[in-house]
Length: 436
Ligand code: ADP
Ligand code: ZN
Image 1 (cartoon, rainbow, N blue to C red):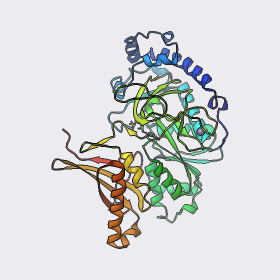
Image 2 (image 1 turned 90 degrees about the horizontal axis):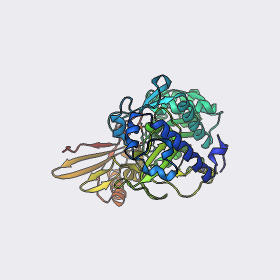
Image 3 (image 1 turned 90 degrees about the vertical axis):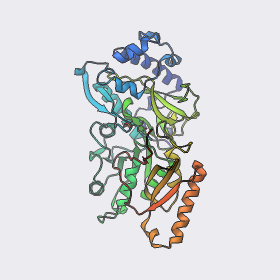
Image 4 (image 1 turned 180 degrees about the vertical axis):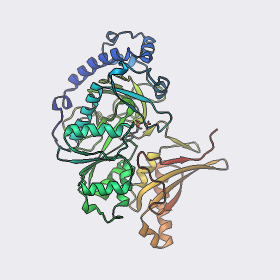
């Protein structure tokens, strides 16, 4: 399944060539990092005082990990490696788990990042004939401007609509015959549920592809979106600390995401011990920038759980593929001592045909016990049927979930529109247990 390449030489480079590039660029990056107060100190602690102290890719393992807290503590300029005058743009993370962090881009950083996105877009088979509606939030969040620049570089027609305002999104998709959208999977599910309201149906739209990212989602959610809308949906992964989207993106094969290894070094580590794991083993993703001068980040612990595929891809690209994100180390729920990832729940409920497009995971305490309730929206016509059938459906959902998460959750069935809607990253888990 070949598609055109954006930069064939790099995208299909032999591993030895990629590693040579990584080695060279790592040393350059160390040079940049040593200009920041934060890394000067951190690297000195392990005896790294100059780029030449790193000779091989194995030497990477001498470098201590960087954490989100390091980034926060370095606010505002502890990780700035250039003069402020050279900074072209400032971005920050969306702050899902606390205070946002700041990232600076020099002109060449924006240029390199844009190129990674252009490469990612082309890998999905999208072209300069496509009409691209960017439904991600603009502003400091990297999902807006990142894809925007990449799409312009490819030569797509870009509609910079940003997030939210569902009626207007649908109208715009119709008016301009949008063919490609960039959106969170939860919001695309919601958009689908609102089709038909203002007389605009699926057949009035020209949509054929979606880049879905910024939040965890299961393969079953992708399938559901593809089936409901009759489109191809491609997983897109990135985080602002490492530029934003364009770290890893699915190609036409849709079998997980190529990490652009000329721009990042990806490692998978055991989140408990910090030990580096082999390809194929699941653990925490650690990323190192190779082409970012203004805020170079070394061995960043993403807290995202995934694995790297050891084998190649049919598209011909040699850059290793990252699995979909299986959860964040910090989003695991402990319910009466049992570990549960929200992704396990999502995977199960999204394959049940009666379940519509929204759900919520609710946790509270009853007496001394934790109580897990999964609230799902189901299609309205089901509420017209007999109560017994609703009970049977509920029972089926409980059974599906129990098989996967071991504990028995409560299940509530709701009409569409009853649960909160998110226009950006969805907040699926409501944990009302008292914090101690
Ligand atoms: P944060 O949400 O940490 O404030 P960002 O806005 O930079 O900061 O979001 C990056 C995070 O979003 C990633 O670390 C990851 O947890 C999540 N994310 C991004 N893309 C995906 C994806 N395709 N699948 C799953 N999770 C994703
Ligand atoms: Zn591929």
